[in-house]
Length: 421
Image 1 (cartoon, rainbow, N blue to C red):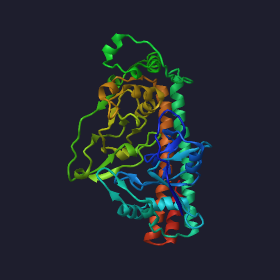
Image 2: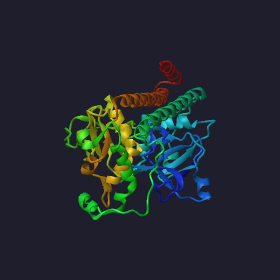
Image 3: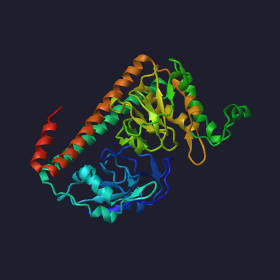
């Protein structure tokens, strides 16, 4: 087995340089396709840290819950992609241990227990030394079972690709409806605003008044179906909930939000063990929106699975009787919502969009027939995502069965669940 730490370098969100994976871009045992950060690297650095198909990425530094998170990189484009220093690249000998099986094992309860016991904990984070990772003992399962696990991973990746294509179709339906088919934001170095604008908004930072924000709002205000502010079209739920110390809750945080608006998992803890920021109760149909600049694209739909869960106070929780929740999700994740969210951010140490600015976002009243079209695309996308998640969970469970019983029992079980449509 070979291994390598990632590159330590400053990152940016301005599309300058090479895409770089971070620790929160691994979801359900796969590396995400939506990569938000870039780094300026020379050719030698790119060659040294460029990811190859089937590389395994191990998160060596994170919170106590997420340290050791492991995912496999499946090549999805010809562009170079590198990985950051708090990730480790692992390459097993595929003749002995396939990358897919290694990924599945490290995500089983047995792999996680072994990782956690090797982790060193400090106040806010945990760390697993690379030498400790190398000492993890891995059962050598038969080639047939490993190949079946690899097949499950490949099917899951195909399903995720299909899901993202369908979600993209939903956005394609939205933007032409607003006359924004080919619109691209333009950052202007010079522009003129009146003093009264700064007085009425209470803002004096030039970035707030960039004309690109006005362009988006003008398009919304010119929409034939009408428009209004988010405050008038939806309820922003900000009441704090105090969890009961002895009750078990699902808790959703920023790291649990997938790139297409899905929730990839959650923490399950007694109320007394939850972090102090676990104070927002959500319901099926709510949309949760990250308030933190740098993570504004982390927006998700609350499904029945997470009804009555808790989420971090770092999210705005929104529910609308006017707009379908799936349409609201697409709107806020599109350029229509993202530019307005970015405009509303303020602060010094932690830049975020507060409730007042969030409530002022302009929202088009999408026509009913178009809402239905968009909703159907989101439903289809989520269904494909669930299929992928099930395939990966089956692969992981098959490994656990092989450890608990034997390989033939694992093969029989995997074949039985694979035959279910």
